[in-house]
Length: 71
Image 1 (tube, rainbow, N blue to C red):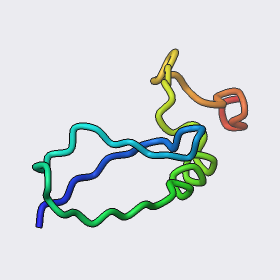
Image 2: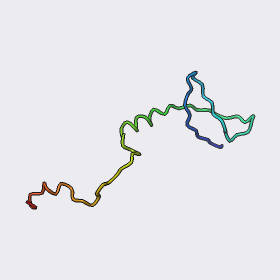
Image 3: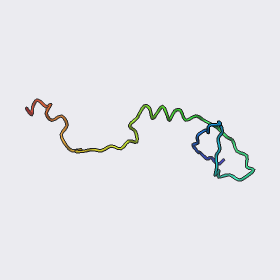
Image 4: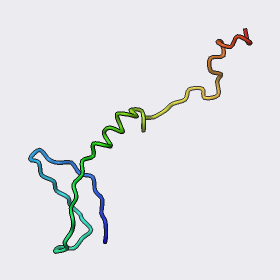
């Protein structure tokens, strides 16, 4: 059994069109449609995932002025 995964968006008229499938005309296939809500919830839980991080001075001391022993 060959599996093929594609992520698609439902159009305004509530139809779904998938082009370029790797099957021959006349092949019988099973079609399962599943909502991607879990991915949306995941992105809300970790809003900074995938964002660019810029370290200005990564080796600088952190909170050096707060150490009592250095005063």
